[in-house]
Length: 79
Image (cartoon, rainbow, N blue to C red; front, side, top):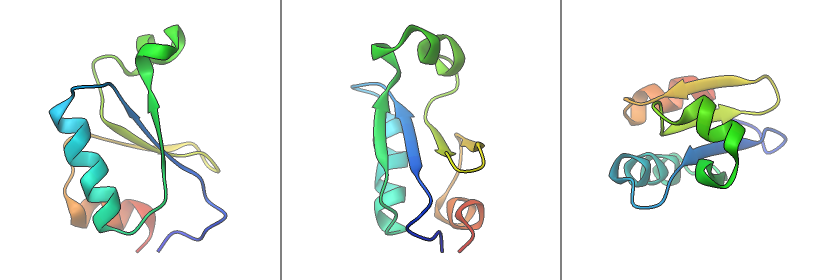
């Protein structure tokens, strides 16, 4: 599993059903993460607007875009 030194960000928007599913999967995987609303930043909205939800590990800039399930998420996180 991902060590505590890694930072995980979930890029999302409010009222995004898929983003809620992604957050639930992160919680099931017992991963602490920061949810960042892309609507609050023009550059993020431009980069992720058609791809959310996206999980990003900030220490190495790896990204996992939707669709993914719990198994794929755990593999991405190194479980």
